[in-house]
Length: 244
Image (tube, rainbow, N blue to C red; front, side):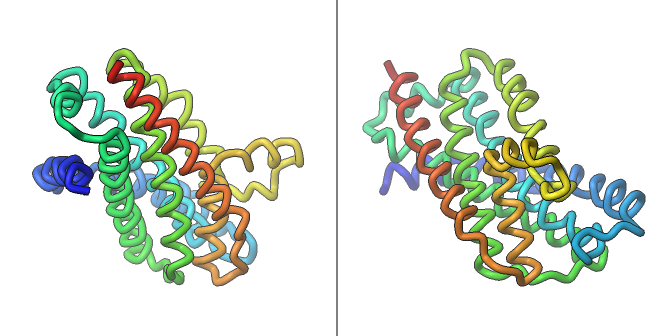
């Protein structure tokens, strides 16, 4: 537990030093999406009987939980390739699981901050939804899954530049295809089935249902929990491989 806290607190100290810049960076993309899709294009559009901006905000929160949690991979790569901090962790008596959980919880914390920023933007633009425990549980599970994946990928890539390729080929397509901007129900069956394999699709659906006061899709929560466990085990294995 002490080792886990040491890893986590290191990341939190870095976040605190950059907090102002981080908040601005986390808010730019959601603000642009709200202005372009929510107001400019979606002002007269309704989805499932609700205004498009109401539909968009839970999806943006889910997307931000993914992107900001996965952004931990970049932080780990800087520490690993340039600052040589990972070498210090290798030399210290820190169990692999403690290192992985410390970095994963740091990614989860960043994601929660990003979600709060999205919800604040929605409030400023007049969106009033219900953000209860089920809403936060869905996004926390999503953030945990992608933070765990971030640790795994940060250990497996060989250069910092390779990390950008992962963002381009994994995170960016998922952000646009995971139910953030449109309902998956409007797609053909084959496309809907394929996109339902994405964790973000389940996070968006669960978050919207919770925010709209609809039924709880328990299978989506189970899927996110299983994805988080799988990525956590992958991260532990990847740290072991990086230490060899």
